[in-house]
Length: 99
Image (cartoon, rainbow, N blue to C red; front, side, top):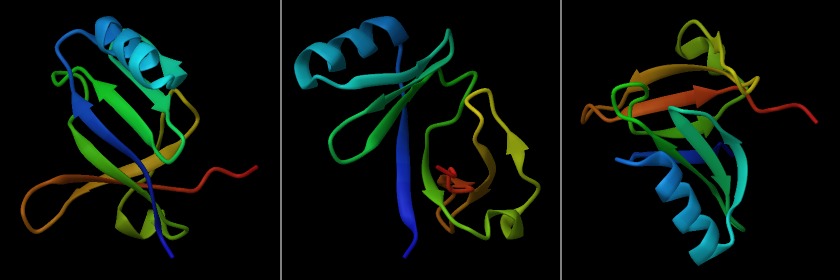
């Protein structure tokens, strides 16, 4: 079964948002730079993005991610491609990370 890896939402102030989620929900910061951050919760990862740099999206892990388009390697060592669903929502298709 395919799994949701993370959901990415746009934020106005990245550091303020990250701090709030850490304080209110004890989220663990997995990655953060000036344009996006990835936080781990007990049941899912949530990404905060600056809209002009990264689109809001839902990311799925699929073994056959390369069948959806050319995979690009990202700063956090993940590989993925972006597609749109029938309603125009942006979907990131990621290769599962190997342990």
